[in-house]
Each structure stands twice: as C-alpha cells, then as structure tokens.
Length: 430
Image (cartoon, rainbow, N blue to C red; front, side):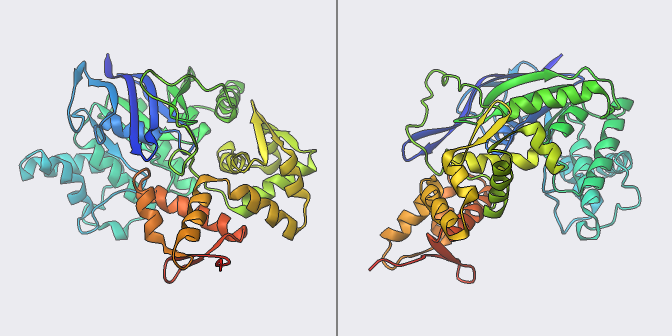
C-alpha cells in the first residue's frame, strides 16, 4: 500500500532577486513495509523535504497526499524524531513520552499505559522518573523515539537521528532500532530517515533516494537495496552499493532544466550559495594532499589514504570548488591552476590568493561590502543573522556565519569581536 505520495513538489523562499528554490520537481512514493533513506549533503534540501512530508512546512507547489488524501497542516499519519532530541527539560521521561498523547486528549490512565509500553519497547525501563539532564545522549534519543512511537504513527520520520551521538552509541541504537523493525513489533508501517552518511543509508534502508542541491534540491537517483538484514559490511555487494551511491553523491551530473514556472537564480547569493562547513585549515590541508598527488585524486583513493568517510571530505571539496581551487568531475577531484598556486605558496602568498578567491564567495562578499558601506567599518552580527534567517534555520545561520568568520579573518578582510558580537573591517578605509 502507498502511504505517502509526493507529486511535483517545489519549495521556494522569497528573496531580493525573486524566488529562491530549495526543492524542485520532487516525485516520491512511500510504501508500507519499507525504510526509505533520503541521502544528500548539506544544502540538498533533504530536511526541508522531510518537514514537508510531516506537514510542518507547506510546499510552494505540487501535492502531498497521505493514503490518497491531501492534508492541511500537520500530517496525521506521521511523527518525527529530531537530531537534537527536542525534549522538554522540566518533564520526566514518562511525561515527555506522554506529551503527544495529551494533545490528543487521551485520559491520564490510557496515557500512562501507552507511555510505559513505549518506554519498555525502546529499552528505557527504570528511567521513567528521570529528567533529561540525568540521561546520556543515547538515552535522550531513546526518549525521542519512544515519544514518536507511542502514538503509533503509520510513518516514522527521522532527521539525522544518530548524528549527534558518538559512534558506538549511534551504532548500538541504530542496530536496536533495526532489530525492532525486523521483529514485526515496531508500531509503524514505514520509516523515512534523513542522513548524509552513505553507509548508514545502505545499512538501514530498503530504498535510498539521493538528492542533489545545485542550484535546487532534486532527486538525482534512487537505489533499491536488495540485501537482507542484518547487513554485512564486508560482503562485495555492500561495498559495490556504497561505491555506486558515493559516485552519484560526489559527481557533478548535468543540472536538469528547472520545472515549469521555477526559474534558476540569475546570480549567486548568500541564500542560494551556502558556505560549506569547512575551516581554512581543513580545506588547505586537502589542497596540499592533492598537490602532492600531482593535483588530482579519485575520491575512493582519497578516502582510503586518509581513512575517512566520503561524508567527511564533501564539505572540504565543496569549499575548494566554491573558491575556484578545484574542479570535480565524476569521482575525480582536480586542483585548478589557482588551487595549485595556493597549495604550493608560502603563508603570506597563500593568504593573498585566498583573499582574492574568498571575496568572490557571496556571503564573504556580502559581509565585506556591508562593512565598507557602514559608517565606521563595523556592524553587529545580528544584522547578518537577520538577513540569513530568511533563508536558513537558526542552526544553519550559526554555521554559515562561523564559516564566513573564519574565512574572512584568514583573508584579512574583516575581524570579529566575540565579546561584543561585532564585525570590523580589517583596515578601515579613510
């Protein structure tokens, strides 16, 4: 049975230059009995799509139906587990789990019985009276799962539910969740999980949907995962799927034409060109490694050499590409002439090359230009936060400004006074 149907979904936000697309042309079905992973790097729109499925935000156009019927507001067949746990700190574990039931008007006795059942199911017996501050990260996320499952939704939506946990805790919780799903005692009919981790997607999902985000989020590819669970990472089929999906994520396929009525942005802006979460040291280190390999490497060779996951490298490669220091084609990353010069230069010369490139990056350019046009070469951080808040979540705004602060400081374009939360031109023009 098809539980959710998405047809021609687009999501755009208003900007100074017109509509800024986040998602475009999304067609997707979620069926009973399957786990679907929405996979993509930052900026691909996967979390926005998940929130559209939940009815937390409306699409700009297109339709979403639950069991064949459109809905307004929250989707009645879904609940969501968030990355940041989102627990109410003044409530106990049991009270947190009962919140959703209370809003549905269930009597106290029925709420208590259902909550204790969910708490037992998710392995939290004995912690009913504990408060969130008394729990580890893994235990807090278990409460999030119990709170979502207690209402027995048709579809459980999960937004990177393991990314805030340490590796061992995430592995344990993911394994227990899959055991429950495979046991037939899981009180939902389908799961949709957002992740940026390829291995996690292949471990969990029956179907992996890969989203690309340039210049708008669209479905780049879909893969059926025919492996039986529990899945063995060491079998050739698992590795082949990882490699296939990873090449799709890292490749730069030709951008499809925008759906009818959705125009492509005329120019790059801070809204449609987000800064990757990459420090100057990180991107510089990657450039130096590539330089030592004659300026180019295959992603598989690079991840093997550094013993890293491709997810760890994507922000760094995106940063090099955004600065014009590298070009990515298929699974190959190659330094440009400018990138070769940057990676081989001494510190002062590399700073000059970096400054020339960074000033062309929309957010860095916006901060620098705004400071040059201010009365005294300084502006409060709140000004930039307010502008970015029209296009990003509060967490994303912080990430964007953190990256821009580091890049601008290294380029000696501006400084940042943490105590007063103010940006200043590095050299105030006379």
